[in-house]
Structures are given as structure tokens and as C-alpha cells.
Image 1 (cartoon, helix red, strand yellow):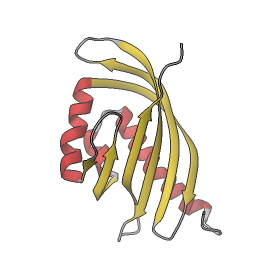
Image 2 (image 1 turned 135 degrees about the horizontal axis):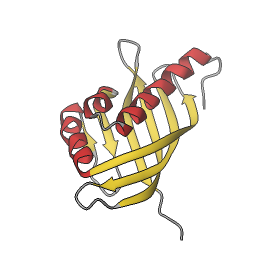
Image 3 (image 1 turned 60 degrees about the vertical axis):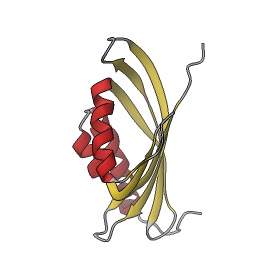
Image 4 (image 1 turned 90 degrees about the vertical axis):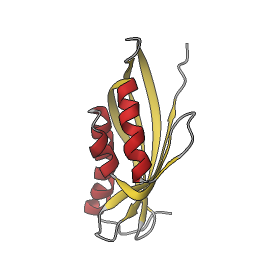
Length: 138
């Protein structure tokens, strides 16, 4: 259940965290991607074990960007503040992925769920991020 009376500015701040992540990801900027996470943030990616904490995230994202190039666009589908300290953003991305080892380019679609927590400084950070790839339908 969403908090009634949540201001447009508050929803914009929540959405801005997801947008910051998505745009940094598309730029392959690992440091900027990880900066959006809480210290204990968790990445749940397709067919991979969960990655827990900024120390591990700092190691994983550069590996992702070394292996795959992304040219994606995103669409924010939903922004909901569920308590004073928790919110979620649902989004979808689509575009192309390039396998850097083979040069193979293919279309890709994902859907994402960001669970955000307000930090002690009052900023919204990614506490949990789950993404799943949508299978191509021929």
C-alpha cells in the first residue's frame, strides 16, 4: 500500500535513484552504478547468485561491462513509496547487447524491480535490485 500524501518531489527523488542507476549502467560506469546502492545493497541478476554489499558490487559490475556492451533505453513503469523509509520502482529496458568477446549483437529486453531505502542522510539508495531478461518470442 502506498503512503497517501507522498509529494511529487519525493516520488521524483525516488525515481531519480533508479534513473541514475539505469543511465550509469548504459554508460558502463561501474563506479556510478555502485554509488546508487546502499552499503548492504543486493544485486539479483539473471542466472547468477545474489551479489551482496558494495565491496562485492564494486568487483562484479566492471566484469559485466568488460564482457557485454549495452545500448538500452529505459521506461519507468511505477514509482511507489510504501513507508517513510522504503519505496520501489518498476522499470523496463530494451535495446541491444554486444558480446565483447565475439562481437555478436542481439536485441535484449529486461524488466527490473528496485527496492529503495532512505539513508540516514535522507537520500534514496538501492537496497535490492532484481532484473530479469525477457525471452525473445519468435
